[in-house]
Length: 277
Image (tube, rainbow, N blue to C red; front, side, top):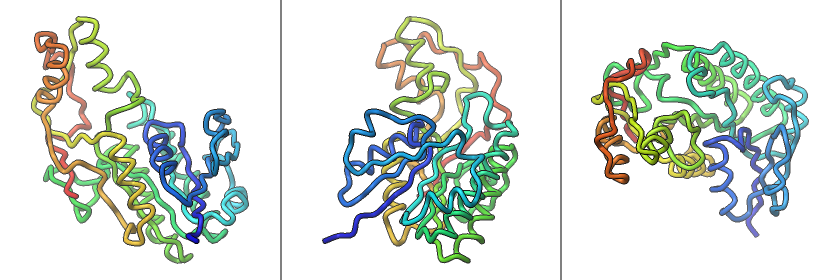
């Protein structure tokens, strides 16, 4: 009989984390342990799902994590501060960095076999535009700097304790349960009401990936013996903002409502960001 894997997940109620949970629930021989601030009644009814309460997982100590991760096989850490419009430049990124280091050290001391972290394509030097896992790192904002620093630290720390380490650098997500302040939900909300959608530059090229597909890739790397080191979570294809917006507008037959150049471009956005799988 196949051994049941015990997988601990942080950020399980988040945009990406919830899809990771949904993907894992479809797998056999897996027991999920969720670190949560408030128990989810729908999840608590499911077989092989346990919950551990915390007021703030980033404030927990190394010893707390050592106790909570005893007998855990894999950790998938998707929790982070990601409030749209604020997270990229927030000092809270370094609070999340410090809290994650406590988690990883506690997990290493308790004998966890694998730690999977969620990174970002913004860690890379994006000057070339087309990014593979060997592209050098050059984070330019607090969010990407904290993520890159965490990657560098855990890449050295965890193998010293016999823990496999996988770092999933996520590109541009969209899909189910996305925050309404993000691009795709904003477009749908405006177009569905017959209102103009005010957009930035039309020509920037990004690699968009549906959050369900991203979760499937993360789970694949988490469960695979080959899933170690840095991984790109991307589609491998670029699309301009114009093409993306027009595809969505065509669902409503309202391209006339798209107003490009009406917003200042995000100064942190490079002209091209496409992942290489």
